[in-house]
Amino acid sequence: MMVTGGAGFIGSTLVDRLLAEGHTVDVLDDLSTGSLTNLADARASAGHSLIVHQMDVSSSELVDLMARRRPEVVFHLAAQADVRLSVAEPIFDADVNVLGTVGVLEGARRDEAVRVVFAASGGTLYGEPDVSELPLKESLPHRPLSPYGVSKKAAIDYLFAYRDLHSLEFSALALANVYGPRQDPHGEAGVVAIFGELLIKGEPVTIFGDGTQTRDFVYVDDVVDAFVRAATRGGGLVCNIGTGRETSVNDLYREMASQAGADARVEYQPLRPGELARSSLDPSRAGIQLGWSPWTELGAGTGAVLEFIRLRLAAGDA
Ligand SMILES: NC(=O)c1ccc[n+]([C@@H]2O[C@H](COP(=O)([O-])OP(=O)(O)OC[C@H]3O[C@@H](n4cnc5c(N)ncnc54)[C@H](O)[C@@H]3O)[C@@H](O)[C@H]2O)c1
Image 1: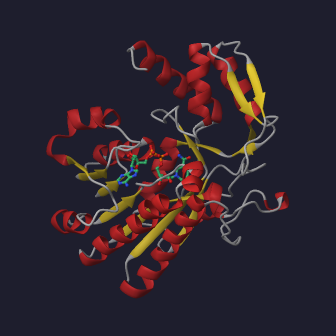
Image 2 (image 1 turned 45 degrees about the vertical axis):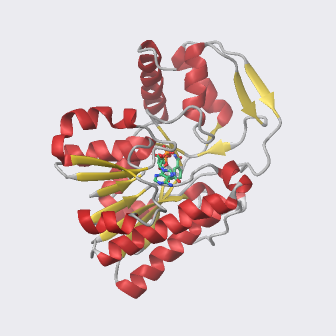
């Protein structure tokens, strides 16, 4: 198995699961937003079952590496995943997300890999449809509004083309707002990680807008389970991976503040341009095609995040 982006938040959690199931795993990651710390336990225990290749997914060396390693399944998670950076630097975004994906597909096709499982973005794929469409279904038109959303959509189009042209099977998972331990609190999308870090440190929390905007928060272990299922099921499909439920940012904050026992100050700032008002993804297709459904309740998931941050800060990590 190969996991691109395997040193990242979701990728490293997937690597742990694959190793626990007895697979041999190659990680390809340039460590730009990911970190070897995320793979520390895996590296300590996996021995020869885990090899980490520090490499840019859009580099011309990728195809050679894949020819040497010949993975049966490639989980493609390496990406430039920052929406605002994609607006500021769309060429860089397309380089990593579009050309990187084409490189992965070329490598997989030449080495006769069985399948590519792709991390798509359900939060950007459907643009901003009418609220009456919530929770969003895969049958909605794909109308991303940011360069990041467009590059992720283009990657899906390539998956379909390679399936038709070269019989290379794929599954694409349109992820909702994934949260869990190891998420970077300094990243732009990880509101659970950001709130958690500030609450544990007792620092003020900033909410952009009035906090009534909603998101569909899905726990990382549940998401990793979907990836594993998608290695053998859901071929040729995009499947939403979310809970189908909306949680407002205010409700998320209240839940986490009560769990943390913190009385942090909340500062409200103007809504940032381009932010969706409401979002949730209908996971019915994943239920039918992957046999998947989310099982972690939000409170259990945020509790695990707070505990992880407490332990990390206690260990002296910034
Ligand atoms: N976290 C979410 O809520 C969410 C939602 C929708 C989609 N996704 C997608 O899931 C995937 C994983 O996201 P994540 O949240 O774990 O983010 P992350 O930043 O923790 O992981 C991305 C990984 O890719 C690596 N990477 C980035 N550019 C690379 C390059 N050019 N070459 C090789 N490696 C590179 C990073 O170092 C990192 O380890 C991404 O494709 C992202 O677009 C995430």
